[in-house]
Length: 203
DNA sequence: AACAGCCACAACCGCCTTAGT
DNA sequence: GACTAAGGCGGTTGTGGCTGT
Image (tube, rainbow, N blue to C red; front, side, top):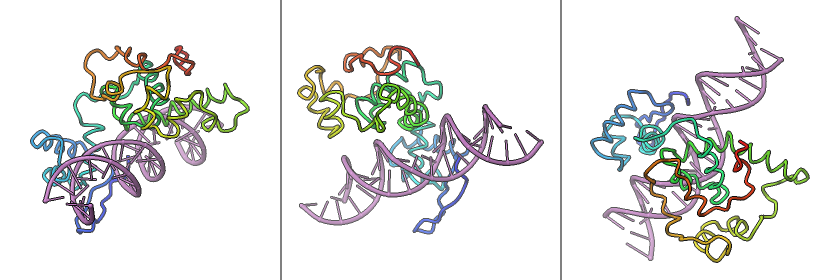
């Protein structure tokens, strides 16, 4: 997407920027196969690509990594994203950790281009006189605590919201889950099935 | 057919955290 | 403990494609 360009780094080497070519993808994948997906700076050098390590990492994580699901976010996934976002806010990596095959970047993009508008329009429908729905009073103490300090809220979840209690360690285990994806029941264990738009299948 | 506006998404940027020395 | 480099994350930008006029 971004234009092909080169930037001169302080070390006077040219760094490639912009869209990745299939040839670059192939080189990067080969290099990662040999050296593993770590030490991105050395991978960038060893692969012979004039890319920075960050760029290589991003390309691998968001595009080349095996088991990546692309496009067609299902209603189940969308509902899950909505619920997780409600709970965690813009913690895209955490949300992505609960959506096998999805990347934080993809979820972030999907949120910004689809769900953000949906949520805003739903909020406006509910509160037509509220000019800034996002800044309105949180519905409960949990929302309030989350708004003020998300990390603390999650850590102290058992006491912040007496209506929702669960194993924090289990909740924070964001390692990829195996098995059929439609088994999303775990989320209902943690999240209240409340009035969140779309939860009733209206999307 | 040409143009403008909008949308989706890949990629970059900057900040923060973590690991290594 | 201080410093530095690398990694990770969220926010933002830029471009190609699509759609409407």
